[in-house]
Each structure stands twice: as structure tokens, then as C-alpha cells.
Length: 218
Image (cartoon, rainbow, N blue to C red; front, side, top):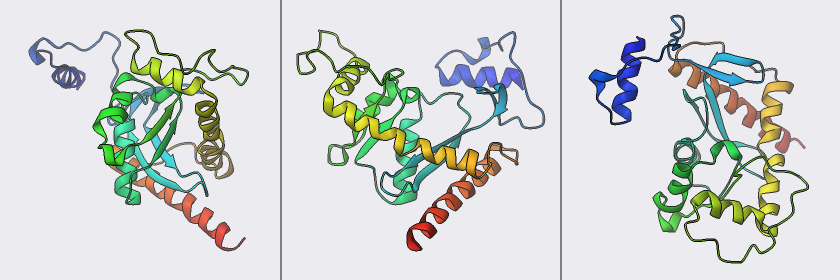
């Protein structure tokens, strides 16, 4: 199994499959082979990565999926597509933490989304400090050779960019807290990626139903 994964990884990276060898410390889980070892607050755990997109007015979940990736560096495109598929429309604005900051994610937001469906994106380029001051000259030209990450960093250093991104902590973070703490959902009960995806979809659906119930009976 570990050899097969090594060949799959080599193929995805455009390398010769026949030369692929598993890393010395690679592991395989026989009870849930579709899960992966991921870093968490509890250390390294066997897990899947649950993703959500939340709208800003009522904290309804408008897109969700589960991945086998231990980080979010390639997850902007799948999440945008999930939002379009599950809510019926593309977002006009996207706020994401530093885990989503990668050249490939920013390239997708800049060039892959059709101009008529352009998404205004605000993606943190690193851990944001509450006392961080705006750039001395946020409107000055960027240095020659500036990367997409450099441009995004400059964008968030402006007063407008910083103010918009600051809304994120009141949109998606409370939802994760409500799911994990208030409802006590911290672990998947099922095994296998498809079953885990269904379980996560049910959790997200019930969250939104509870929100709508409170809105209608407020």
C-alpha cells in the first residue's frame, strides 16, 4: 500500500512512477486507509480535514467538503466550487486565514475565476497581530518582482484591507466554536472518505437548520 501511494504521488508530481519509493517513516492505517496523519492541537492524529465556507450575515454554512490534505494550501478552488455547487452562486468576497495563503490559491483567485465572476479576496499572508500598523505607503508601487503573496500582504496592510479582513474572526471562527464546543462534535464517528463526507455534510446541515430556526423564532 505504501508503495502504491508513493507511485501515485510521483505520478501527480510528473515523476517516473517506477522510481518512486516510500519514505522511510511513512505509515499506513489498516482500519481507515483513507484518513491521514495530521497535526492538531492534540498533537498528531489520524484524521480528515473538514472545510466550511460561512456567509457573513447569519453564519449559515454555504459550502462544505472533506479533504485528505493536512493543510489548506490547495483548497481555495475546491471550496469555491463547493460554494457554487451547494449554494447556487459564487461568492463575491472571500476572507481566509494564512493557512490558505499559497501562490496556487492566489493564482486561482486572480486568473482562473472568470472576470464576470471576480471574487474580491482577502487572504492573510501570516499570523495577524492586533497591533500591526498599516504600511507606511500602502499605495506606493510594489518592488519589481513582487509575488502574489507580496501583493496580498500589501492589500491587507491598507486600512480598508485590514478592516475587511478583521471581519473574518466574527464570521467563520464562531461557527467552528459552535460545532466543536457547543455541540461537542470534535471527532468523526465513521470511517472511509465518502462516509466522513456524508457525516460532515450532516453536521453542517444541522448547524444551518439550527441557525434558521433561531432566526425565524427570534
